[in-house]
Length: 250
Image (cartoon, rainbow, N blue to C red):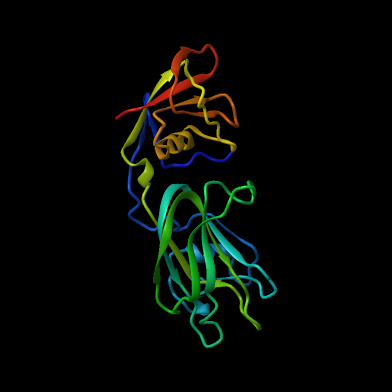
């Protein structure tokens, strides 16, 4: 089961989902990579935008990596709107950040490879080296993992290199939403939607908030997988098991 995301706070009997990300969401968050040379993927989120290799702060994939990628875990669910990238300088290396996809995932694609890649930005060309460059997502997706995947490798020494990668976006879909919890109750419906991946109560609240027809969801606190039920309409019944009902407060 994945760790609880931090976008939703449970307070008393109400689930509050609030807040706006005003700072770099990726700063010093956990990262992974397909390969690295010299500096691993964490160098791209250390807050140092120095584009020189001597700063020992630029992530660089291995020279023989045919399909390099870089990924950050935001440790929460956000609507990704903006990427700020800093490319490496130097005569040999100022064109190495080029032609890539920015993909947004709800769960770690290494653990859940069946997820579709949701592309918020299809970048063509070379990112201007030396200064931070702002890139706007053409499609906004809500997710926890942001992945940069190189489209192709040019002939010669064309190592995928990122000196700093910043991610911005609000909790948007969740902002201002709240759900009241009623213990030992469950809503029975003919239109129940059960997520196919392991869920937390926070994730269940997010799914309901994004569904225009959802005003209630059920959650089982004792189960580790498929414990969330999204409800469009139905009737509430007593439950002697471990289910609780959450109702959207409007």
